[in-house]
Image (cartoon, rainbow, N blue to C red; front, side):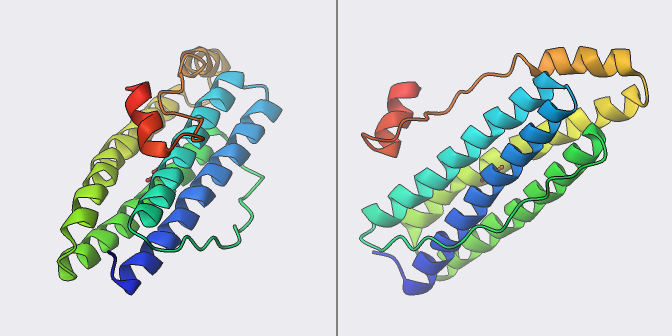
Length: 181
Ligand code: OFO
């Protein structure tokens, strides 16, 4: 059972995770447009990660007997100035998601909702890795500067990123995650 405020906040988080997926899809399209298919791959993998984050919440709200209420997604930006710009915006967005998850955790604690607190711990741990990945790539991009050869080397490296989250949720999200582990 969820407190109404908790259910509403979890529904809002579904929207934020879906927007994250939409944002990274847009960044993938931009990378593809400028000929950096490795970056495009990295952001498309990130899109799948965010869909998984959204779907985990979607299933959790339902398993707790609450209603999923989906809202409109705002349009993501489509124009960027460079790969450094993409990752600077990605890091800022993930920091926003981290604070949103921290607020959810504060709410779960204040409502003595232990099940939601345990559920959210996975997301909070995940955010440390997400911000670390973005910071690492920002540092590399700063070192690369205006060197196209080095940028292409990084592009090749990012082309190797693979999807590690489930993408087929027809049999349930947690079941799919267990099968993929
Ligand atoms: Fe990029 O993070 Fe979701 O939660």
